[in-house]
Image (cartoon, rainbow, N blue to C red; front, side, top):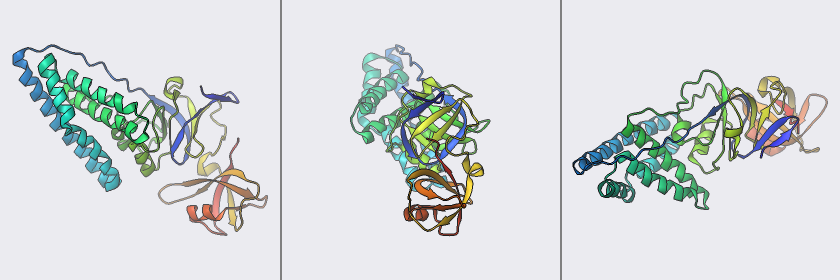
Length: 321
């Protein structure tokens, strides 16, 4: 259950990409549609296998295109995330099992593929290992692509063209979804499930989008249009009943300015410090000491992380908690 504070609800999760943002919530509901089983005749079996093979080829082309765009826009390391997706399409154990079901049970290709792939994903999701458990998301991402191709439908979750800035809240986001986020309008995102080792988390860090995962039931308890603050430092997502409240940071514009002086933390208060960068503001949460004369003493590690020294100006604000 979320915590209640000042009439607001706090959902705590795992911070996977640092930053703080505040804005309207957009809850995206990616319900998995039921895949109907359909009996096929003996003469139709070869056609179903042919449909499957064509769908695998098309899906591979789609993934290679996404991988190319990610590699060009983010880097080869981030693009390599999709190597795991390509391997699913080459997994002979999985594909041979799908073909066996089509032949022996005489069912349509999409039903056979969904049955086998979901069984694999469910097994992976139940393993007590973050890395292997997160591979279930990769499996389901690929499965969705294959099924969309077989059924001739578009992806039901398109986050490339959003109408206004928002914080995305979802049960989960696939690497494909994250790679195509509309960076102009996605302030940050939070998911019910996930871990720091997920491919989605890795991509969020590269995109420099604040993100918190493991929020449990946030997607089912929040609604479109509500206001929230997402804190990628201290792990909560806060539903704001008063959208004007300066919970942590009203971003750089609302922070006080202070001149950095040499010194270490004395009072241990948590402070969000921001430095204006050409490409984007850079935020850091530190324990620091602020004076009443417009000065702030940052620990040496914080100064190095922010790339500032004595005499430089930064924005800062105490956290209200």
